[in-house]
Structures are given as structure tokens and as C-alpha cells.
Length: 240
Image 1 (cartoon, rainbow, N blue to C red):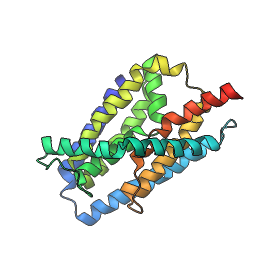
Image 2: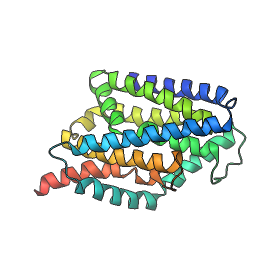
Image 3: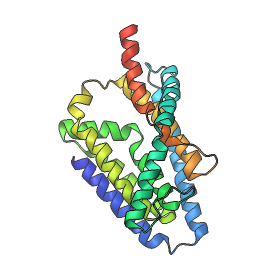
Image 4: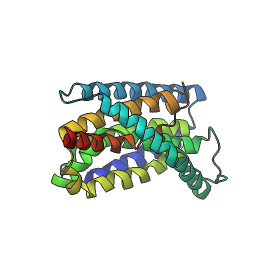
């Protein structure tokens, strides 16, 4: 869990700094910071997508089906709404909010956006597995630095809601680390390639939606695709 604790610490530190000093920045500066972060996330998504399709075993039908099936599952479960509800309750408990989900609420938007940004992508999965199996947390340490700067930028625009995304990092990434021995037995390079493509698409959706505000996209509802992709790989390996 060493890597996850480092990650949580950098998110907390970056969020506190962004929250403390971000309010002193003019609105136009904060908008520019968010735009830069959105563009970087967009490019990171493209990079992950391209990295995944370079794998010789990659089958683009798998991530396509995964995203479609995952989105249907996510919409049925209402994952985005669930995360917004958690954000609203945290705001009511710690920031004097009403506890209601309000469209455009900075606290909720910061919490959901940061949680997705810090937990989507193969770095989270691979890094957690390495940390859990061998104690090698180097990959998570690199991710921690990136997340720290990202949380600083996000908190300067969205406020204290970003701070609570550290809870999602702790439970999601930490849970993967603790379950690494079981997960490692099933994770193959082919699965990681598919997860990379799906993760890249989710980061693109995150950039286009909450960060750049080009289109409303319920990115959280696509999260089940990260689980559907490796399951499809297993299914196809059995059938073919």
C-alpha cells in the first residue's frame, strides 16, 4: 500500500495548496488552468489509446463492445449520479452545502472529475499490482507526482471538492493493491492493452466533458467498460 499512501498524500497536498491559493487567482486564470489540464488529459487519452492499439494482439472490437456494454451497465446503475450524491453529502458534511445535487456545482464537479482522473488508466491498475505483489511502488510514485500537480490545478478551479477525491484513490487503488495476488493471475498483456484503449477513451471523454466543457458526457457511467474489456478477452480465449 506504500504507493497508494504516497498518492493520497500528494493529492491531499496538491488539493490543499490549490484550494488555499487558487481563490486568489482571477477567474480567467483559473479557467485557463482548467483548459490546460483538459488539453493535457486529452493528449494523455490519445497517448493511451495509441499505446494500446500498437499491441499486436489488440482487437478494436473488444474496446468498442466494452465501452458500449459498460456504458449501458453504468447508465443502468447510475454511477455518475451515485458519485454526484457522494459529493453532495460530503459538501453538506464538510462545506456547508445543501446536500442536494445541483447541476454545475463546483464541489461536486471537482470531486467527480478528480476521482475519475486519478483512477482511470492502466497506471493505476499496473502500479497497484506491482506494489501489492513485489512492493515496487515506483510507477505509483510517478503517478503520484502527476496527480499532485493535477489536484493543485483542479482545486484552484473547483475548490475543496477535489480534496475528497483522495478517499476514492485510497479505497479503489488501495483495494487493487490488496487484491493484487488474485488479480495478477488473470491479467495478461493482452488485457492490459485493451484496458489501455478503454482508459484512453475515458480520459478523452473526461477532457471533452467536465474539463473543456465541449459536451456533457457522463464519463463515470462508462467505468464498467474497464471491467468488461478483460472479461471479453477471457471469453474470447475460451471460445476461440
